Length: 216
Picture 1 (cartoon, helix red, strand yellow):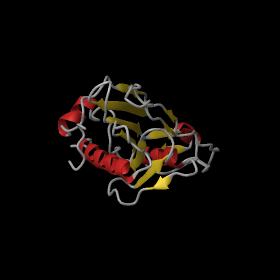
Picture 2 (picture 1 turned 30 degrees about the vertical axis):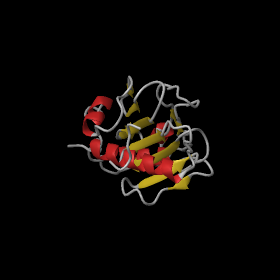
Picture 3 (picture 1 turned 135 degrees about the vertical axis):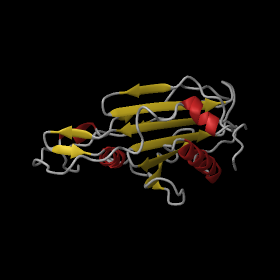
Picture 4 (picture 1 turned 135 degrees about the horizontal axis):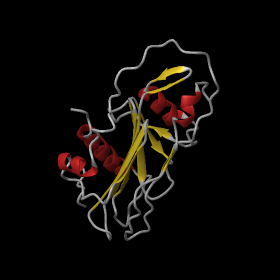
């Protein structure tokens, strides 16, 4: 591990719930005020279309029941600090989990990994794949100033959310039916969320967690 962690598009009604407000995990105090990052995904507007004759989509890449828990992620990425109590929620066609990894409540690093999974849906207009719904949620009303990340090498899309805002650098990745958000704060007094050093740390962690959560 290169970073030392111990230091409106028109679609049927189903797409109305494709993107929701994401709220991060537990707040963790540090030497500098630290706010657990959030990742907002506004709800896209949609209108009724014609009846779809498309066949049902195949299984989603990331299944709700088998997605790695926070302790399981740390087992596969042992350099991660211990996880705090995870936040996990599941509905018929949505699943979310937030893992906060930190060495203690007084110093860093502070790493938050949040995943939002979308399941396949069917409504009166036809079938909608989890990947389709995830892409909708990921790309609706993207805030100005968001920067694309082209060197990551994982997922189909990646970007830096809210650069210069908050006290952590936040990397968002779209991969099939999953939106994965990694927030990184070194915990040091000179931590700068706009710096390349912070982004390098976030990239390193995001790639290792990505590998850890791949379906077997």
